Structures are given as structure tokens and as C-alpha cells.
Length: 208
View 1 (cartoon, rainbow, N blue to C red):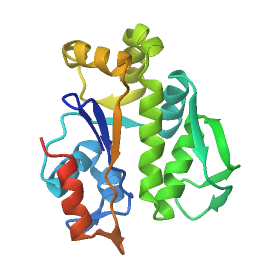
View 2 (cartoon, rainbow, N blue to C red):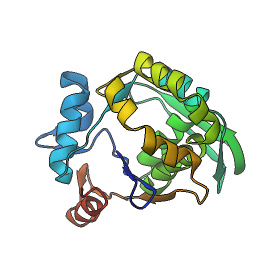
View 3 (tube, rainbow, N blue to C red):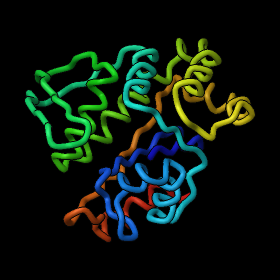
View 4 (cartoon, one colour):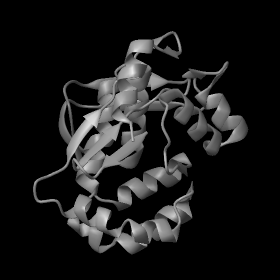
């Protein structure tokens, strides 16, 4: 989940596991059986707010789109060697410590790895770092074709009218001389249920 706060020039992010339980089911099950719109509804009910838009990418399409937005430098504190063969979509992470350019496939795998390791802070950080790097003057100059590419590669309720109406906001986010503040709402779980205190804290990030 991502919220753009133009009053404070900030991004707010909260990543959730697909195994997150809601109303007797999981977000992954809801997505697989009834689609992204019902995942959006579930998140809105959990966080007592309304999310204006959704964007649903297939994995490969997301990776291609991510890469089209330019390089993202991301720093790892330690080496990662991890392999998951149990999930429906297996993945491997092998990365050295230090700052490096990450591609879309690495960003996806890092977020999955951090969530499976119960390190949501770092999962949030991957997205926040990407947003901060990729919302830039170069992409602003190419924004029309990037939006068209987004619509082509994903399922979204963002319309051309929405995009046109957001032009001033996109200008601010891509051309801010003072930078954009970033915040990650960290969720903790008891089994697959979000703990009440961290849910309440996260709700505060997404109040409209």
C-alpha cells in the first residue's frame, strides 16, 4: 500500500504478506479467487480508510516496467543467500552486502524475502527507495509514454482523466528540490494475523 501526501511532500508505504488473514481468509486467497478489487476492499476494511487506486501487475510485466524507470541504488547491510522452493512461485536471492543497482526482479525477490523473514521495515524500504529514485525529472519528461506503458502492462482503475488531473502533483514529486520524505508503517504478526497495536499504529499513517 502506498499513500502520497502532497501537503507534507512524502510517501507512506506498508507492505503486507499474502498470508495476512482477513475475515477468515488470506489476502493471497482473495486475490487468487476474486481479484485485486477485493484485495483493495479488504485492505480498506482492515485499515479503516479508502484507497483511491489499485495497480495489478503480473510479475514479469512489473519487472519490465520497474526497469524502464531507470536505475535504483539499494544498500544491503549483509550478504543474502536465500532460496524458496515451497511457494507457488519459487524464488532465489543471492546478493552481496553494500550498495548496488537492483533490477525489477531483484526488487520483487527482496521484498518477498524480507516479508518472509519478518523484516517488514526493509521490505518497506525497498519500495520507498525505488519511489524516491524513480520519481525524477528524466521520468517526468517521459511521463506520458510511461503512463501509457503502465496502463498497457497492468490492470488498474487509474484513468486518463485521473492522470491528467494529477499533473501538478506529478510535477511536485518529480521535480522537488528539497526531496521527498519517506515513511514506512511496520506491521507485526501473530501467526498470520496483524497484531492489534501495530495495526492501530499503521492506520494512523493512512488517515485521509
